[in-house]
Amino acid sequence: MTRTVEPLEPLEPLRTAAPAEPVARGKKRGRVLVPLLLVAVVAGAGAVAVARPWDRGTGGTERDGVEYGLAPVEQGSLSSSIQLTGSLVYDAPAPVLPAAKGTLTGLPAVGALVRAGQKLYEVDGQPVVLMVGDRPMWRDLGPGVPAGSDVEQLERNLLRLGHAKGLGLTADQKFTPDTATAVKRWQKSLGLKETGTVPLGGITMLPQESVRVQQVGAQLGAALGGSSIMTVTREDLVVTARPAENQLSRFKPDGRVRVKLADGSAVEGHIRSLIRGSGSGSGGEDGSGEGQGQGGAKTTVTIVLDGQEQAQRAGQSAVTVTVVGDTAEHALIVPVTALLALDGGGYGVRVSDGPAPRLVRVQLGLIADAKAQITGDVRPGAQVVIPK
Image (cartoon, rainbow, N blue to C red):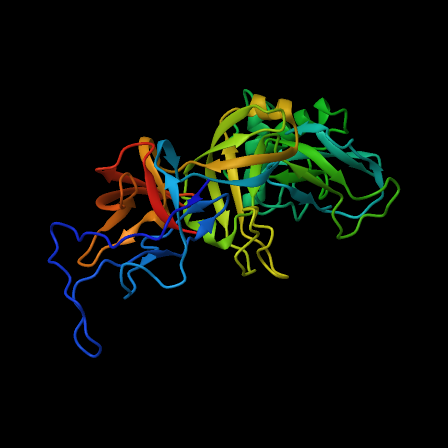
């Protein structure tokens, strides 16, 4: 809270500065003390991220028409952390596309977990099994097929699932008799006819060993085409946030963050990625970043959490993300509007603790939330002069 003060008497110059001489119109000006007019740039939930926010100006010790008040010098902690709203969601959503034609005869429930080697869905009464791989199936695999990376993917899965024990099978891109034997063992474990051949569409290759069904986009009895059958995700929850343009510099690769969950608990995490959007704009004033990207894609930050069990208990929900910045403890804090840019360099404040305010040169520390950390001949509880 500020209170009005009487018009200030002329200040004594700094002891280190030469006395100011009266200046006649048209003659060279002497050394003067320049009052500060602040332009505070507030990012996110109020953090200031500017290197030099004060202009020195060219006036005298007072500006005509400017009213002044007083603000207390506080002692406490000052932090440059910023906060914004994010979402707790399952990681890496991806569509599942059919590899062959047919009629959809079986679908998983939303939220179901499917692991490599298990049935993901069913076509024409036959299971389509999840396996791990980056390349989709594009042909039948069996004895006599040319060597290829799809054969190697299949062999790696057969080895991982334990169907090649005692065979001496290696993942070498060649469909050998040992490969056919391992395929028959796999087919037997599923109750399928043991042909030793994997038909196109019998396997869905996805990068992860287990998936969670997020959404089902097809109906039983539908004829398969090129459309997605479902969307799956990883089992882990991550946080996604959309920062405003003026907040992006605070999101460093692998930088630490703190996430407050919907149940009130907090969990630590780190920044995994920042994908720039095509939109432009400064974002919402509340720090949510939702004002960014008029008609374009928004910049998205993905945060990996340290406490997965804690996140799973909270479930998908909105969260508060704090990007950890610098912190000054037991600091002397004044409003940035109290700072005066001094002729010759440096800053000062005017302290009102006597008949007339006195000028005190100060050193600046952390600047955040429209406040400044100072050190100098100033005590906590003192009153400093600020423009109203």
